[in-house]
Length: 88
Image 1 (tube, helix red, strand yellow):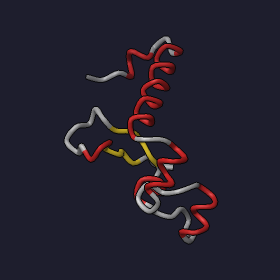
Image 2: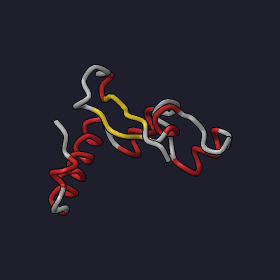
Image 3: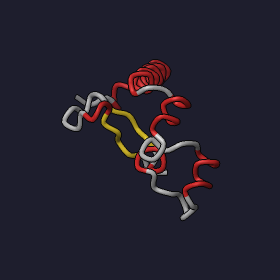
Image 4: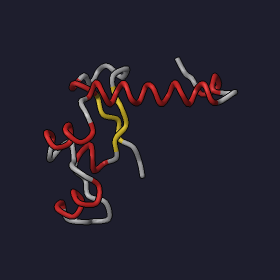
């Protein structure tokens, strides 16, 4: 599934503060034409449609940023050639 880039705290000009979300969780775009209630059951709340429920289940933007950065750091440490993937 493609990944949307979500700008944390609506900082659309700052690409250092963002994380990936699928279209459903980011914009409420249904997968395979499923109706919204079924998508909510299958995939959980959408940030766009159910923001409070989304934060309660997945965490705040800062928590998600921290988790993403931790996972990236872990991945970089586990890959010998990770330097080739890092861009400035």
